[in-house]
Length: 107
Figure 1 (cartoon, rainbow, N blue to C red):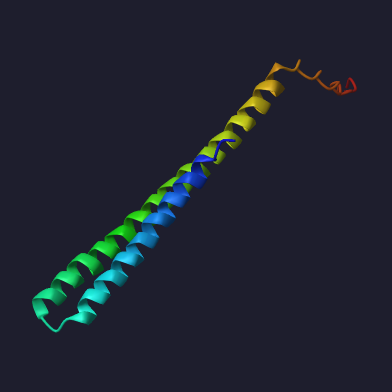
Figure 2 (figure 1 turned 135 degrees about the horizontal axis):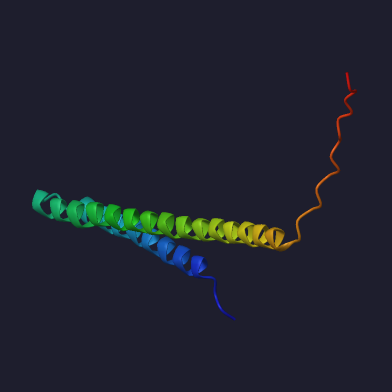
């Protein structure tokens, strides 16, 4: 059984987002355990900024993959419309309707 590529991409994105929150939580634990400002700054930089970066990358990756999936669906719909138009063009032309002749009286 094969997985849909969008599912795999969204699971990867979710993993990155969860990892970002875990890194933020670990950074917060480092900051909360010490009173030394230099250790707190290390926790803020590595945990906070690193976690936000992971969350951002996960969100952007998910948005790009969903956009590609939607575009692929739109392209498929366009191909279907083009196929229908091509089939309609292959039909024989409809006969011309009968013309009405004008009856003029001679003066």
